[in-house]
Image 1: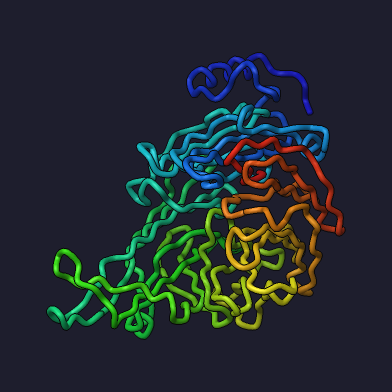
Image 2: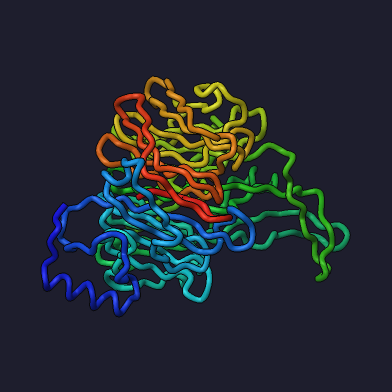
Length: 453
């Protein structure tokens, strides 16, 4: 690491600190030259709002070096020593591959939907960079978004429209429910909106008649060719024959949580235009592909996109990893990896995962539903073999809020701590079965560590 600071850069950093309030004299880490090549690892933590582990009180970040992250004698207290990333609830943070920049779209509140890029300079020092970008007009104040490719962000929004029906009371007949979708792309290098698109999303006539509709979309990724973007989806269902009469005298059709879920689906758009939407369907699992707050789709070393699923009904084999073919831009129905099968468990629930190259992935999963334990395994997607790790108190962990896993070369960094309790950064090597305990994570009541970048 460079230990000197160029005078001109220091003055610029101080000026930016005064403007944005993102630095302080008691930073635990140094303020370094923005042109320095130090690789920082940023740890993020979510603050409790009303209930332990709800993560709705905002987000704190603190950056350390890889050497510090691997040192079990080094301690990080992101909640007392970190910087607050502006967001009314949990910030949806993303990072550049080199760890130099953080990207955030504020989630809900008066400034919900505002994008900001930050330079990471160590400790609690993050310095706002470039323009703030207002996205709420397109994707509301609570957009779902990800870094879909290096230098590219994609934010999405799906809003189910009112149910259409025919007839008069009490003989109403369900017709359909569709969704309005908005998608934007963001230039992360020179912050601005690059493209936007809006359209109505319809399932097949048969699915619509049965009461299925898209209720949420998320986790966009741009394919290797750079000409398509894939967006995961959750599909909900109404009981078309069951309704109550609302205060307006119109029917309110009940949710159907008993029938089979929809087959897994993904929205495909042309990129960079974000036009020509289509839906592709896998017949390998009835599940959601939208995830929660973390990346669920990765471009593999072979060019195919690997996508995790969640929310399968009990006894249906748990979460899966599916593959979207790089040539056809459709599901490869010759490929499916069942987490239940390879892990030897029942009703696995994939909370998040990280593709780390050469067909290797690290998965963070629960057993029996989201939030029910936190277990770590390394999976070879080609051979479908697995290494399971013995992390202390795995049955007490809850990774529902997890957002990111960091990778530097062959090393993978995961923040692991129970809600409200101290933990550690754990370090894994993709080429071996090793797991080592790194820096200590100091926690506070109700809070939790949710990511490394």
